[in-house]
Length: 107
Length: 140
Image 1 (tube, rainbow over the protein chains, first blue to last red):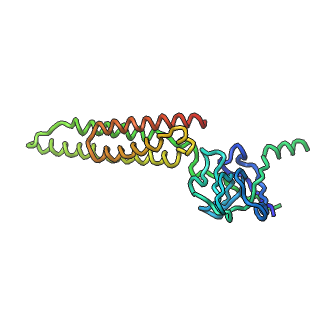
Image 2 (spheres, rainbow over the protein chains, first blue to last red):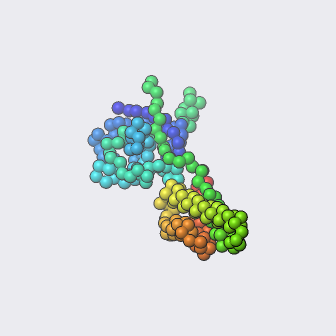
Image 3 (cartoon, rainbow over the protein chains, first blue to last red):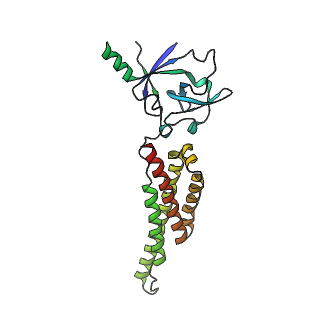
């Protein structure tokens, strides 16, 4: 139901940074449609064994346009075009590594 | 607990490796080679060594002009398709036009021995370098 990942690379800065944790709700899109503005984890259309974190910037029928928040440092729909909603794992919730660190210190 | 997998906030090319310098150097080399071709001293056709040296020098200048014009085009195309993004086009509405013209000039300086075209190429590459510097500074 949930998957969790560790972020690599910088294309979603400042939203999430390398080393942050990402929790993915795999039920997110069972009963609702993806919406513009949501951050998502999807299969890389060029290499389905790899997962990407991007933000939905447009929705057309069952296809999505996804981009990194850090436009200078992102390979996304601007390179690989529209992606099918079937490539989505789910909506991404980021847990910042600094928040985890704070939590450890407090306890 | 299951081990966490990686999720990539991915970028194909590591940032910070883009530079205008190769395209600028190539454009300057094209000018230099054009200048050398135009100024190559005429030869005494009866002196075989002089004729050989003339053809050798001319061939080398033409080859270098060909090579660097092509390198200039390649470097420009990489910057155009990989470095510059739609945000930059909003900032510089003539960005595509400038690249298009510069790439065409790279072909023209190969086809002809044309100092005017070589100078136009240098100016075009310098204008692109100016856009590059402005966008690069904004993202530092």
